[in-house]
Image (cartoon, rainbow, N blue to C red; front, side, top):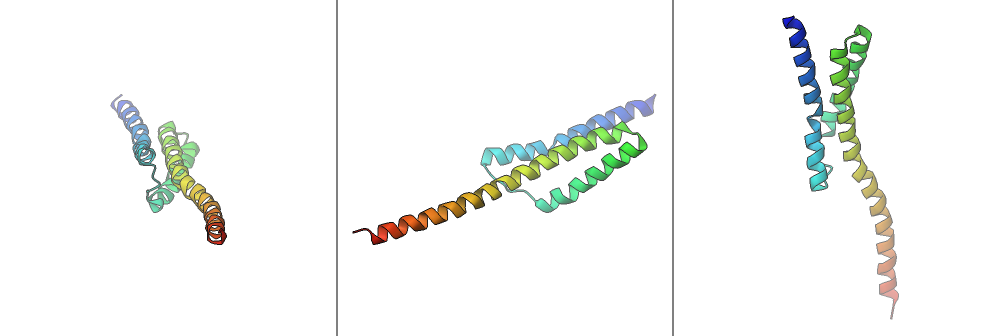
Length: 110
């Protein structure tokens, strides 16, 4: 009985821990930032995936559920952090060309 209570408590807290990176995502959204350690995410995400795979192979929902949640939240953080960089690069590239055209027109205009 005590082992079952401990297992449920540990698995529940693991879900909460898996949700913790949402705090980082909230901070990035508030600050309109993409400042996050990609090394952290790209080391963590395969670990979560491995724990999910192990939990599935072992038939252990206490491993599968929290690590699936943690993987999903980590992937969301990675996606959000990468999104502005791609959009910024596209916008910056387009903006640079447009800015250059405008500057040339102003320079050539009488």
